[in-house]
Image 1 (cartoon, rainbow, N blue to C red):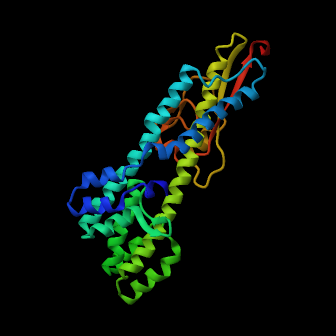
Image 2 (image 1 turned 180 degrees about the vertical axis):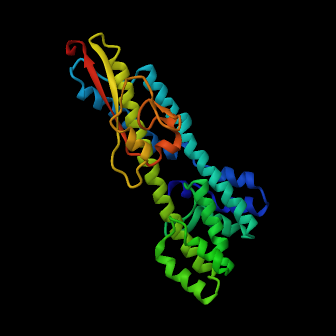
Image 3 (image 1 turned 90 degrees about the vertical axis):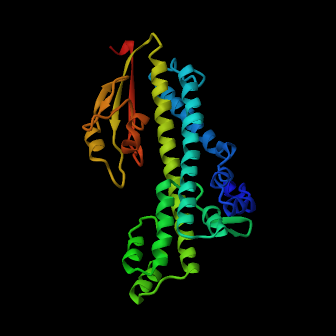
Length: 302
C-alpha cells in the first residue's frame, strides 16, 4: 500500500502518454525505505536464531555475537542483495505489465491503473506492484484471454492457481453462452486475482526469509561456539518437517547427521551447509519447512 501511494499517478500517465517507458519504470520503483520493516524483521530473526543456539548450548559459556565479522557480513548481504532482489523482482514485473498493456492496446490510464491499482477511498486495490514477473505476466495475459470471447482461451484462465475462485461461475457461464466478458467484469476478476496473488507473495517472502535468517543465525552461533577452547566439536542433523508438498529428497535426507561445516549432499548434486542455505536455490528452499538441528559437544563429554 505504501509503495502504491508513493507513485505519482498523474506523472505516470504523462510518461505513458509520451511513450517514455523508462520514466514510467523509474516512477514505479519501490523506495528502499519502504522495505526497511522487512529488512529489520529479517535481521531480528537472524539474531534470534543465534540466540536460540546459545540458550540451548550445554554450558552457559557459549554466547552469540551479533557483531562478529561473519554476522555483519550476512546482514550487509541482506540489505545489498536480498532486499534489493525484491525491488528488482518488482521492477521486472512492472516492466512485463507495461509491455503487455501496450501490446494489448490498453490506454495509458488503463495501464497505470492495472499496475498501481484503482483508488478505493485512501487506498489502491488490485495493482501488480509487489508481484513476481511470472504472476504479473499470468495476470496480464489472463486479461487478454478473458476479453477474447474464445472459450478455449477463457478456460485456460481457470487453470491459474492464484485466481479468485469466486468468479469461476461468471467465467464458466460466459464460456457456456459463447460470450466475451465485459471490460468491467474482467477488471473486477483481475483486481481480486492480484490481491490474492499479492497476499500469497507476501506469505512466501515472510516464510522464506524467516527460515533462511533463523538457520543462518543458528549456523553462525555454532561456528562461534567452535572458537571456544572448551568445545570439542559439533554435528548438524537435517530434520524434515511436515509440509503440504514435501520434497522426496528432503524426506530421505531427514535424520542425516554430518560434522558441522561439511555439506548435506542431495542426489541432484546440490550441496547445502544447512536447511535454507541460499546455495540450494529456489529448488530446495522455496516453501521448505525443514530445519537443521545442531549438537555442540563439550570436551568433558568425551
